[in-house]
Length: 161
Image (cartoon, rainbow, N blue to C red; front, side, top):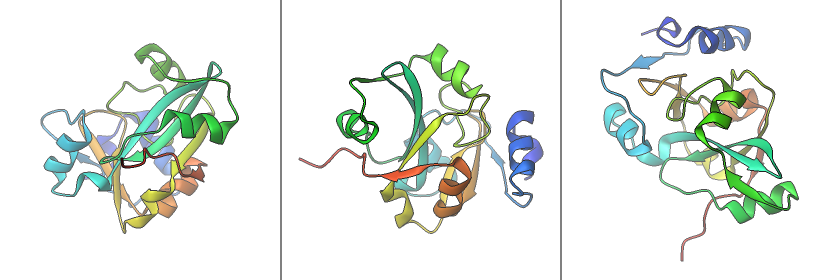
């Protein structure tokens, strides 16, 4: 399937980044969680990229995290040198990215936002991210995804107990 399956804004972002050969897949049912997306694709949940918006001292920041891990908000706070970091509500996510929760891609947003990518994403050959809707995903090698997202690599995953 092609990039034409993605929302126009995201399809345009793919074109602008020169990612003409990226295959966008559409599913009949929404894949709002990493586990649902992994099951639909047939990959490990750690190969799913979650694009999560937080507010650092009120300023939106996007965190890219693998689907089998959780973001450690304290580590994000330390990385950004912020006084406080909180999870963004649905309205802030849409205003910041132009997309609804569950469909936020790692790039192609309506605003320029600081992006952190957990270093663990680089441990995969290919990762899958939302293509602008809860029904669409696309594969990309993680280094290319991180570069096109303009992300800073960081260690922001929750540590195992």
